[in-house]
Image 1 (tube, rainbow, N blue to C red):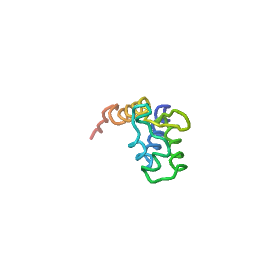
Image 2: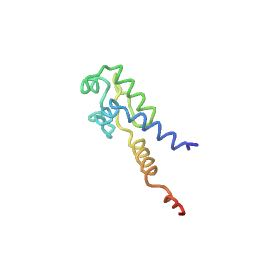
Image 3: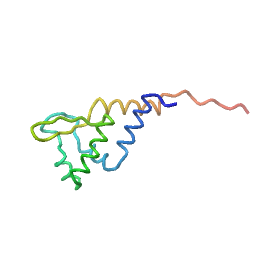
Image 4: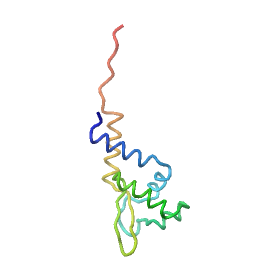
Length: 107
């Protein structure tokens, strides 16, 4: 039975595993300021995708805790959520490294 952290990690991996969402994550900065933030229009132009498509993918990334946002004036700006990204990285590392050695079979 999956634990809460396994469920969260699976949701984050699913969200990050889409090729378009990976491209969005690659473009987003971990610095939450106006200079480094991206809005939907800017991301759409850089990726050659419509604003509704970008908004859809950003919603999934926000729900997975990988992206944070802030409304400033008329636009909403997006950044990588450092805490969410770090939690995902640590949980994934635990999957591959935090395990008991395999038991040997007796012959």
